[in-house]
Image 1 (cartoon, rainbow, N blue to C red):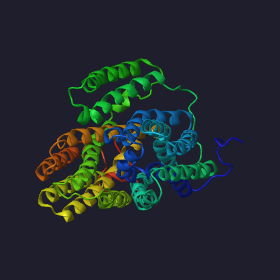
Image 2 (image 1 turned 120 degrees about the vertical axis):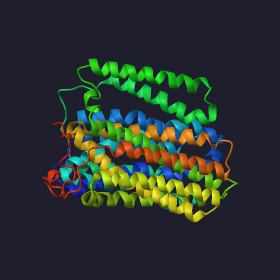
Image 3 (image 1 turned 90 degrees about the vertical axis):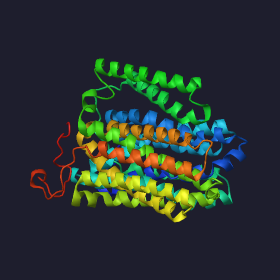
Image 4 (image 1 turned 180 degrees about the horizontal axis):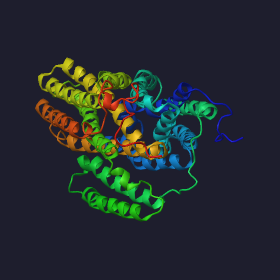
Length: 479
């Protein structure tokens, strides 16, 4: 019996959820503490700071490029199969990463690891969504988002002291062990999803899409260090629309497209994707800018360890907000919750900017927590609306596209706003960039708030089931 074969017995949805989330936690818990450890890694491997940032940037690019394709492969060949194959390879690569002899090897190993583990996000979410009834999808998305956010916080608490006592390599050994635990548990519990024998994977479409994404993200990521007049930057930005045009051209002609283009025109598909650009951009840029501000000599000048602890409220409050999202949607409806989340992100970023110019650390900490809460409560309703619109058969590629657009937004926000403080780290400059980020978060209300959420459950016209805030969405699932 192969480990890819489904288990002999069925488990409850709650057990399936816990096992799937073990993998989600193992794949994400390194990011915060790894960011704080970059100076130590650069010293240990005799590398420059600019080069070693690709330990973070490279995997983010890989995640954005491969996640939609991994989600589609899960839709076609089974999400359990994709989850196990991807996670097994990622576990092995984590141990390889721990043995990296130099910076180039470390960056390459991290990129390969993320390419393999890109299947875990959409596949884990698709498995959980299918295990629970439709009226619990907001709750499922909320718990998934909460674990995704809380895991990096746990990484700071556990990984930080371990790195100080041993080495940064220990972090990847722990991650590899966690991934192996997830693989073993998953082989015994996770159910197999339906395989599509009537379709084949659109490899050429996937390559066009991947090239277009890379051509956008690499210039956005490197513009701050190379300059906007560098050939890599303007060349990539010129090639990106060509790649996307080829992708659209091919998707219209192939019998088995990676993404059915008419589906993207549906409001509850296109608007969640666009909203991720405007939500994730200022939110992730705020995280990076807060770290830069707290370490700047002109503002607070804290150490790396202190900075990692001061930004810890962000993932903690994100997790709490995501956990509360389902109850809020049930009470006031999805649109109100998403608008509340956007306002929270904008308010939090504005508070951080005021804290920078006034030197008020309390404002910074409060802003970090409020922004985290806003992002946490806004995302689950958006995820639930998208999965309801695309239906179970395309859930993997749908959530993969959502993650992809979020990464594009993050890369754009970080690159563009960080460039504004490249040579001017004065408190006034930080106030300016945080104000810009807050304005973008407010603009997100126009896109995220336009998603067709039903009214609060007390409205008779939209409540065929009082416990299901998404049972009356305008665009029904495509079966």
